[in-house]
Length: 113
Length: 112
Image (tube, rainbow over all chains, first blue to last red; front, side, top):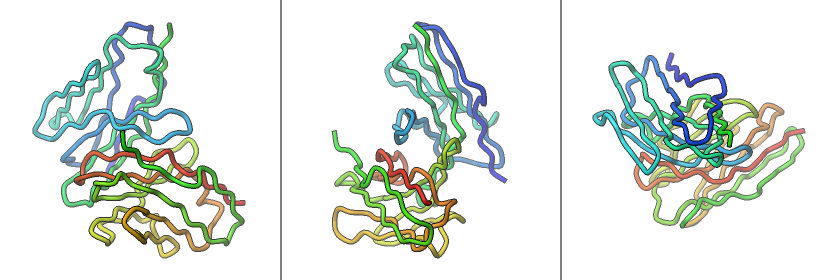
């Protein structure tokens, strides 16, 4: 069956460092991979989308890589700030599935001042 | 910036009762979705809706669930006879195409 795994343990880093979060998947061939941020009790907030034919995408302090051979995406936040503390979700999508997103369980990031 | 809105923010109901959760998607979006998240668990897809019909639904979305776009702005999720295990956060989302989805703040459904 399809499986998406993210770092199960919370990630604690110091302000100013780079946070790297991992998303691995099996038994799936996604067309897109998306990263969302979720704060407690709130809805997911879209951050970045990367397509199957793209290796890397950047937006301000965020960078996503996508390796379809390794079946892995890495999500980087550079120069991290306490305000970046949240749970980060990866989600996969395929063509012709009506936009159905399959989410990972999320990785909780805590950035300490 | 346009946002997806959802009402109510919190709904408490008795087991067996019907509930309707309401969403107003972003106005120029064409695809609409419902997801749910049981406390401490993953966000799970329920259903997607495009061109006034269901495009895709999950195993969770059984005969107890239905969706409707009653007018040009609202998108609703109805649960006919709620069960204890329906207690969750329900998120509505919308998108222009079938890719980047924008989520609402959610409705917390508590079934007693």
